[in-house]
Image: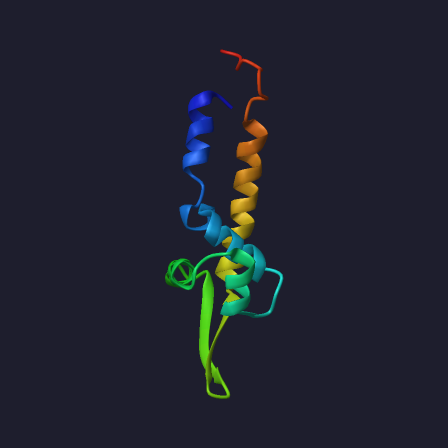
Length: 113
């Protein structure tokens, strides 16, 4: 792969998934049936507002479902990855692996054709 196509491959990565906080959210959700918002807040280290913003973007993109209910008198927000979210994460992993594989090793000059 030549340098321009390498750059194109990086630019073609799914930006909804590529953002680190959203990638973390999807990575947690992919291995769970449902996850409580508070748990995601703890493992991500994000503030409630920041986490809520990223979850909202993932929900708008159809990658996660958000279920709001009550546990007793306390509000409870649970998240679940959708089939589209699983596919987006799998596609992202595959695309990222190809990009990384094509990166030149540090200190090795790219060959020109």
